[in-house]
Amino acid sequence: MRLRGAYLSMHRSFNAHCAQFGATADQYVVLTVLSEEDGITQQELVRRIYSDQNTVAAMVSLLEKRGLIRRRTHPSDGRAWRVHLTPKGRSLQEKIDWSAERLHQQLREALLPEEKDSVLNSLKRIADAMAPPDGKSWAVARRRAKASGQSKALRTQPAKG
Image (cartoon, rainbow, N blue to C red; front, side, top):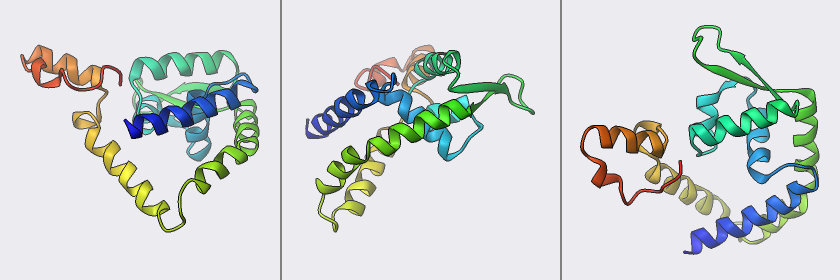
């Protein structure tokens, strides 16, 4: 419950902050990942933000309609989309990032300097340990398990990607 409490507290704070810019914390995460590596596939974006295909598809569609990102077909895989930040999207990401410095500082101050690396490494291990099989979303894992008659084993897993 402590991990959930920490996540919800951070998420609510960032959502309130991002709302000033007409964005959500999740949209900020998408923009930030693309600012770090533009042109990744939509599937890679799903993996990097620990979400599911449907949520990311809806978010990408909305961000594209707002002119913050654009999708292009992958040059070697016509089924895949590469996602790119537009100048407007990069500008918004930078504004939110710069203005969120106070929130980032609060996070840094919540940890002792000697704890930071350990906490970040622990969170990474937790995320990796709880990731769905084969790096797919939980929705995909549940469909495959149901098709193979193993759905009972996944009933205790999270309901969302």
